[in-house]
Length: 175
Length: 262
Image (cartoon, rainbow over all chains, first blue to last red):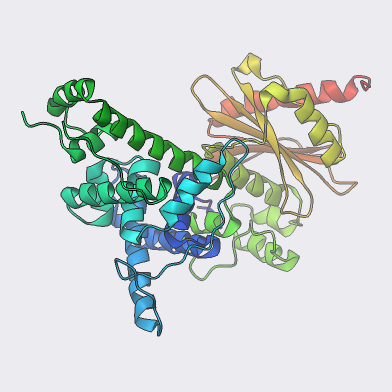
């Protein structure tokens, strides 16, 4: 039995994905890392709730979502002047998206446009497009029905598409 | 069958369409260029988001998150691997750990027992890293050795472990302790990984024979030779790891004995 136990390798492996999601959610690097740290602490607390053999990553995202929702509720209670958008959350992105060496400027624009989506739509879009989770997994993480996942996802993508086109609605061909 | 609607197209684009619907949707896409364009647009949007966020995924994890990935400590001294740890605290920790009892009394920062545990931590950390286990890959082995030599101030060698089934993955340099540590990573056909780490010691450090330790399932053979501490870590059993350690030691000794190349 050793003192100073080592980090759990699977949790370490999950950190980059958790950070990516947290940063896209909160829009700010330090808050994102705070969220990940709180998530890992809660995961250790609640580790008996995780069923061995089930997807650890999906479970960690579920924990993160719950921590995020609780913190947001507390922040809203405490805030005096909150500017509300669609879903009642006034989060302003502070992250400048710098494209990597290979990424083109367009990618940075897409990411910034995603940052302007309401948090609810951003969540489903991130989990589907970036984390590539199944709809059922997303439903479990966010604790919503699969139908809601799909309709929010569709709205998020439509909004993003319109933003990319500069606000011109797409012409839908009727066949 | 109903004609595919917007949500069907989206599910198809995401690879989430139930198998019994796929044929109908694919037939519709073959007929309807706009619908096909719609699917392509969703996939392109996904790709842009992933590539746009790729740099975030590639960042090294900050230390406080690595700490949070370890089981929470309850009323114990601060974890031994925190770089900010003072010398006194290291001694206290050394004394508190029964396994290293006798060695702990001789424990100084940078001496074998602390180094072995740091090596075990680094081993667990980097062998589990899916994106960037090493900084420089094996295809640049010469450059890697040159880089490590320059930064460590001692001639680096990358032992050839093919005879025991391990191929070089690459290497990196660890800082965060008072002296830098070099790390080389090897992998065998079963995807098991070893790390060889070394750090310069204060001059006059006693040479030691191989010592063996286990930290959280990581086996370590460590030794001091020519003012340098070495640690070979892996999840192999003791006999297997010893066999590799002997090969490593033999090659390092032979390299030291050979005339220096210029």
